Length: 247
Image 1 (cartoon, rainbow, N blue to C red):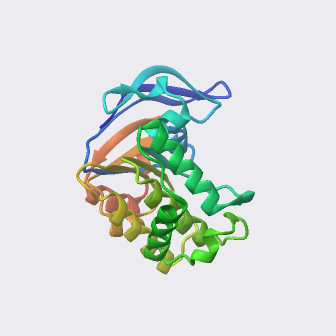
Image 2 (cartoon, rainbow, N blue to C red):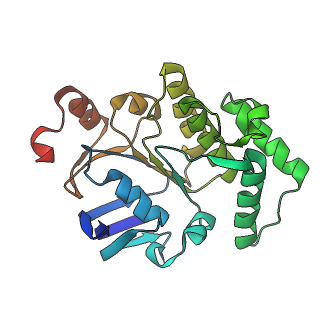
């Protein structure tokens, strides 16, 4: 599904990714761990197509297509979803308005019929209920006045509605208490643990991985993946830290 080969990227002229390679198949969950400044968020932004992140070498394909040659909206329509560590607020734009517009834009790009207002509201209500988010909050401006946990649950509602094929989630567990962490982790499993989908989960901590249970864990340090393994690798990092791996 996703194949990254020898990826180099800079931000404001500073090299961040320095030869990163990774393959993610459909049906897999991959966790990316590593110290601050290693390039984890940069990887997510590069894959999502954020401006200011320049790829200087290497290639990325998604379902066999050149991802780096696609605009951000085309990547989203192709099935890529980027979850942010700090979800942004959009004053004056309701969640319902924002998500219906986004979903129908993607459906048009794929040649699918748009959802009517009634169809969309039924879908939004089902996803909000599953994530424990009051439907009244869906009528409010995107993330405005939301707590940290509410923003992350709202982002999971967005993911459930958009229904992507590949979710890149940047520190989704950041700022969550125990209950919210369980809700969000179970939401990832419910929405994305399917044979035709995949997840790239960027995190610092083992606690979310206890719920999502990744198939592979990778350590990103110095702009490249320096070690890969199973769940036991995340457990070892939790006990021992990154040590020489991050040197």
